[in-house]
Length: 476
Ligand code: ADP
Ligand code: GLC
Image 1: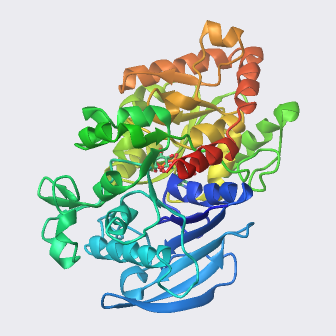
Image 2 (image 1 turned 180 degrees about the vertical axis):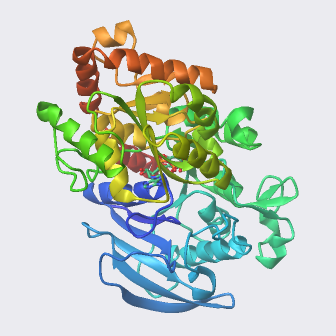
């Protein structure tokens, strides 16, 4: 049994901006099921939604800050979450990282440096909890200073750093080194320094004992200039300590039991999926038509997700006999352009801006195909949710999308491995072509049903991924 301190800046259902929150919910539970003792550390944001009682555990000082540690439970589990309460840093309402206009908070470096220092105090058993970590598992740039600072401690626990998205690096002005009181031995070009700036994510990559990322293909891609963002050299250097482990998905996402959809179904009752399509169309004021190809998209509306490709192909796509349901939020420019299309094509395109958990479930259940034309995608969860719901994903061949979707070809149709539609070029022509291929096949219900069944048979459970993480912990 290992004592694992799992440090993350978001966890569903307390707070979520993306897939990291889903992973931070499911992976600790899956690890606990293998007999490990997992504790989460999360900032006590103003916006947290609690689902279990909250207790105060202890109070201590870190630098000039007085920090309270609160404790609650991860819903439907015995896994404890320790919340770092420091109102001057985490007490703002709204998003954990950006203000209402979408700009990063100006004191993010101080906020997450404090978060890292608190996690270190906990890991080293210095806050009076009588608990010392056997391994500290850190996620994304917000936790990147932990491996760096912990490496200076006497008898420190080993660290694992997971990259969920290398595009977000936590880069700050070099002068922050003094403000954050970072020890000089960490500031070299082998350490936190990155082109004159301080890089939090580099702290994880340079100092963690093991580095993981969330798919085998992305583990290769980040060692190339195209997706390495200047860190490809360091990642290639650490190649022996770098492994790609694909995320699993939680059982909350299962059409058999999902309480947020109109009608539950399984492979044996696949006809009932249509009830969800009709409910979705009715809810979104689209013409109720069970035969039209319904395309779904749920996404952060940012460049990574290939939204520009969708905007480029929309004029032509909207001439096809389709309906398109979009749920998302993000870049204000993308939001505005999508809104223009939606206003002009209300009978075909439904746009819901904002975050909506129950609509997300109904889209997964009601759509026929799900679009993920990502420019890059470390793992991606919706293409796996989609397959479980018999909603065929249309994805670009990158990262975790390449690892989890099998393109429909004569050969994969014949050997019953096809699970969706995959295209290569990050270009609207290639995306349109893939949508057309899906449209053509949709007219052949027998073949379509077979691909749905192949997709629904996929094993996307957390069990094998959790075992791979255990191997990483044990291999240190
Ligand atoms: P990323 O973390 O890069 O955003 P993932 O595919 O890993 O991408 O995870 C995205 C998660 O966030 C999924 O669970 C998806 O359903 C959810 N999601 C994204 N946008 C919204 C939204 N507007 N409303 C509800 N859920 C959303
Ligand atoms: C990141 C990635 C996404 C991945 C998620 C969870 O947000 O963009 O591809 O699925 O983390 O690992």
